[in-house]
Length: 322
Image (cartoon, rainbow, N blue to C red; front, side, top):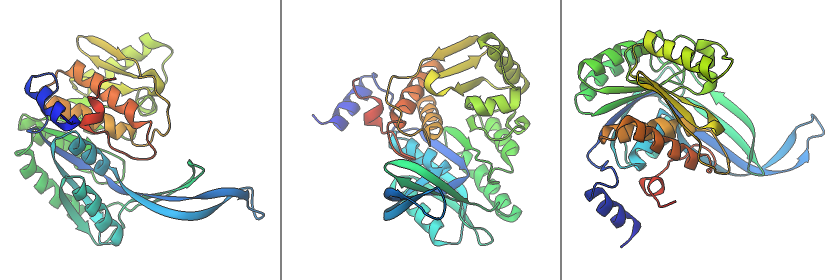
């Protein structure tokens, strides 16, 4: 019996969540992650920077597209709703996401360039990142909101991936629509004004994102007090703080739950938050209790940081015997 067959058998016995019938809607800022790989063996005589001799280019789905790809890799039927430009980069992003098994609902805005992050890699280390981005137009965002209202009826759970690129200008209304339809809503936040996330089910900041909203804390007790105050102010069911090598902490009315990080060699943390929220969402949609879903999300994040760049964690990897 191969690995896939063993997983199906375990799911039938109730040992592993059955994600095949879960339906997840992902909405947010998508981007094309480009990687220029090369050899960096010399320092430029013009400035104290390495010279990279280009060898190859690699492209991956980034931002909300990476969230959606992770959901699909975990077995969920996934729909992605976002905005791209009318350019080759947007078409490449569409191709990557569809190849990952995601149903794509892209609105094309001819006035913008598809958001890109270009990373220059030498000796398996990131040397430089160049970003290209343009906020989408109001007309395209209004059309996306109409599609969102339709898509919510066909999903079990909504993930809103906010990268601050302008694609979630109507996020407060999206949360209200989804919650009115009885759907759980998970939000990966950005910026220092979280009032627009009010009423979501779970918000999943990292420590830097949380600090921008609550201010610095002195100790664990102070952190818990600030997190709980924020959770109540936003009417959230829970606040999940990802804390890097310290693991993650879930703040909820019945008390905090801390999950230590898996002991793994950290290779690249980029995209780890995408993997965490995707895993949390798919597991909740599959009926897994919140505490157990957090533990699985923590494990998935630990697996992701062993991989270079934005990457997915598969169902087989997540439930492999340690």
